[in-house]
Image (cartoon, rainbow, N blue to C red; front, side):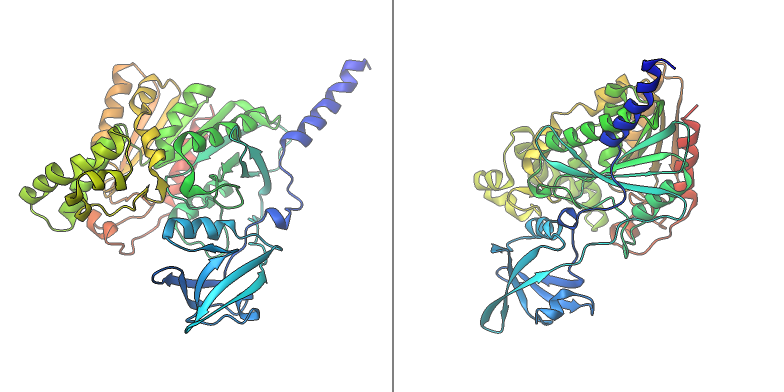
Length: 439
């Protein structure tokens, strides 16, 4: 046997060691923890404890229902965006200082949290790892795959806008997470997810992460997936939900992926999106169309023009036009938990141009009760793909489906947070599409 034939298996083995996340043990210092308690906002700062589960270390530390948690590791809890950063920043097997108020007495305690359990499946292997982005942020990756002696097709998952984890952990009930779990268990493919900076086990703070930093994390993770020798490079697709669905064409174009599944997507700029969603929200709140039109012209156009086009914070826009404060429900420097810099950069991102350039096969889904994204954007995507002579795309409009994998009787019921229905037919559609795109 020649030397180069002997070295080839060794090289492959070494590459596997470098690229494949380690599945056996996850360091507790890298693993997030959980309060096992519930809280509500306190004034002027902090979070009041509403419930404490029996297994919570808060019990051992002597904290009680009604205590107001003021600070974690001496960081004062000031607002909701920061609160989520603190929650995801909790680490297992690490001493954490809690400062709290009971009646008029301020005290402190030290606790050591248990790690959140890892994902586990009966017939699918789960591998936890990290990538380090070009911004020097370690971000958690979760790779699931069936046993296989041949290279596998792969799905790269890109989630939505919010600072919420894409990990399935005990107690999580969202229908989107249920759909992800179904995709993992039934696709027979390698599935890769990466947590945003400051989410899950990732370093950083989500409320301070801008659009370009987040996008870079996805790209570094995707390049790791594409270099994994266990992956069939010609059978890699991207599945994007919500915000991720609009990034999917960009990733497919840049990295020559085999297909795109885009779930609840958009086409136009964020400025156009926000004006349209405000019109829908005002209507669902009961305003007549004359009032809606007046509020759009008088308040929301100047508010979002200042923030998105002139690249200001809400605080700066309102300082210049104080009457707009009545209509702004975002915080001074954030929208939906993300910093305004995120949206400044996203406003300049050419989503429509990426759809226009798309050559990979595409499967696009939108629900008729999705009040977040517009049917018109879906139709615009269909039009541009047809005009460019795209040969392999499918658009499915699902009756009753809202933006969060839930079937509702009306968009208003979804908007009001009423319980809807979940159907396995929804993630099965994703599985069927993913398999069809591997050919």
